[in-house]
Image (tube, rainbow, N blue to C red; front, side):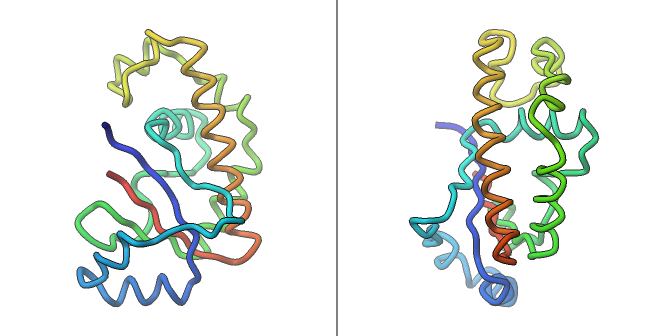
Length: 154
């Protein structure tokens, strides 16, 4: 077990409802599911490595401190405009631009979760590449439909 991060596409109306409901929306948040034809927004434990690379590459994408808190630091709402701007930034940032900042020793020294960078080397970079593709596809799809998103961190 460990800390994972995932995104689920929702309509702007549903996000507004979840924001207005506040803590009473907890049960509804637990039951969010993606539609079968939607790309997955599941980043597994790659989220912090991606966060680190996105920051180092100065992309302006902030995976961890964006959105509107929906409960006790576990769920965040990403309005459609934030989804759209994130999709644009990801589209304009090929993984090679992130990989140029991949430094396993620096990432381990900075305690970037899950602490596999020096141990796994190129395999860990491949892990990040796979999950960056997942992240970019999720945001491209959500932005194309004008959707908002809910981020689950836990």
